[in-house]
Length: 453
Image 1 (cartoon, rainbow, N blue to C red):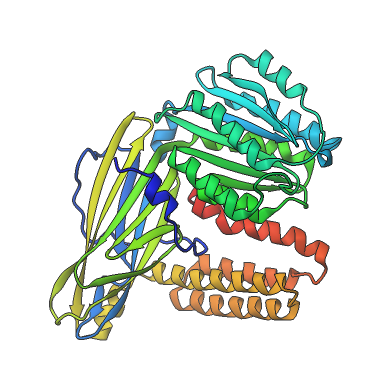
Image 2 (tube, rainbow, N blue to C red):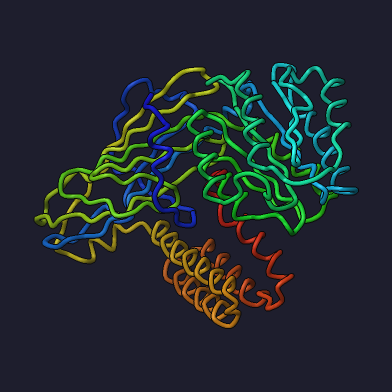
């Protein structure tokens, strides 16, 4: 298993995730991989046949699928710390909902799991030191004593939770922090970059952070960055009454993890030049692309795409484009697993042969990627107060998606076009409405990236 800290902390560019399916051109297993491994690796090209005599742009898709059958058997143990915001703004209904939600969520844990609870305001306090989840009376008593007080030392709350998780951290457990906040981090480190760096360092230890934003006044940029960099998840809970359901879902998601500490290397062959990675933060260094995932969920597909230039080749020739290597901890088999696949391309002078072998699903999803980029640009315009420009760009996005859906006959793109039209029609010039819409859009933009689809 490769060392994760260096690859986790050298993150480059993130592009909004999208759904991609493709064809595995060729593969060869290596190392400890077997048919019963919890994660299946597949890789392929959007256009496995390319035009000869010219440089080509290739889109290499890598898919990691968590075996759904595995989720019906014994799940890995969980090691969870819940960090509860007890700042003054949590007074009343919000705090009552936080306590009720934390108690309700405990029902998802087993006696072999570990749980701890931290409360944070200006002061950070461990109200339930890490212990077996079977000690429900002590855990519930600690939760019941959490009440609203002063400021929001969010960074310190996460750090304290990490200390509790480390007490029982194991590479065979799902080590998770669930962070609840309704406001801004106003004490200690408080920028998205600082919280993101903390998330990356925790990911390097095998600890992920699920962030839950309650109400409409929390800082979604900060909460999303922390979740992204730790490969956790993010939820937007507008109404306190819904909090218990979201916390329950989050602990249910912990139970669905089948693999952790995943590292993928795409080793570009001679004559290929990786340009960028779509759908996953990654390192691009020379011919090598390295991506890390904190977890793989059972029954879910986690995907990213490497865009690369491929040097000109003669007609009738074939070349290796890349070797893909994956290493991960199989939590259900309690073992380290490695696997490898090789991806090749063929070259022709006949354009119709390229078209005949083009994968329409991947081409559809490249259209969706472009649409996601346009959506992000529209939201930036809206942040800057350019309501008309943002709405115009969303409508343009919808039109392009509709054209892509028609060309490739893909209902998923049609659905995306409908969503873009809805976003354009519902986009509000009112600052209060935009505050809510922005949180909804921010959450939806990272769901597939963090949780698979």
